[in-house]
Length: 305
Image (cartoon, rainbow, N blue to C red; front, side):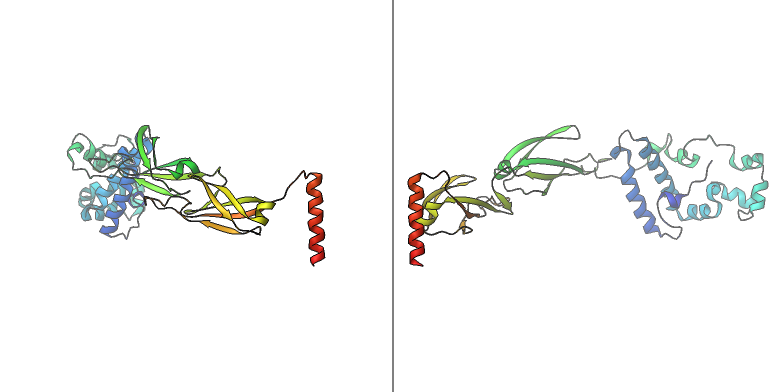
C-alpha cells in the first residue's frame, strides 16, 4: 500500500491544531462531495481520501500512531511488541516482504485507497452519520437591451438543464448581480439548495446615454428656432414631450427634464432625470431668396458693429 500523506491531503501542516484539522476537512469535503460533483470520478476519489485523512488525524491516538509509523500506523501495537523502531532506516530496508506480511496480515489488494478506509466505508459505512452540505451556487449571465431594462417583466431561463421563470425589476443596471435564492445546486444529505446569481449585461442601442438612473441625449435645433425661439418635441423612453426653446439659445445649452430618466431599481414610480444638450443644425440647400436674406442680415450686422 502506497504512503498517503494525510496532512497534504487536507492541505495543513503537521503542527495543525484540532480546530484547524476540522476546518480544513469541512472545506475540502464540501468542495469534493460527490453530490456536488456528479459523475466526476476524480472528485469522488478525492472525497474518499479526505474522509480517510480526517478519520485518522481527528483522533488524537490515531494521529500519534500515524505521525510515528506513517502508512503502517494501524499496526503500531504489533510493532511496539516486536520492538520495531521506524527511525532505524536500515532495519526497515532489511525487512523482507514475508516479515512485513506477518504484521499486516497480507491484506493489501492494490486498491486506490487504504484498507483502513475500505473497512470504514465498506458494507458498514452506510450506517455512519453523514453531515449536511449546502448545494453549490450557480452563476448565469443574462443579456438585455436598454428598452427591456426600462420595464419590469418576466423571463424564462434555462440553468443547468432546468427552466425557471424570474421577474426582472425595472431599472436593473449593466453588470448588476441579483440573487435568486434556492435555485442553485441541490444540497447533500438533506442540506439546503444553493442560490442562483445572475449577472446582467445591458446593451444600449438607443440614442440615450445612461449613467445610473439619469439619461443624457443631444437634441439638434435648427438655426431659426435657436435664434427666434419656439417649441419642439423631444423623445423620451415613455414618448415625446413638448418643451419651449428660448430665443437666442446657444449650442451646448443643457436642459433637465425632471423624472424623464430611467426607473429607480425596485422603487416603484421613481425615476431619474433626462438631460438634453442642444446642438445646432445649420440649413443646407438654400434658395436664392434665402441666400439674399442672409447676405442682407450680414450687412446689417456688420454695419451695426
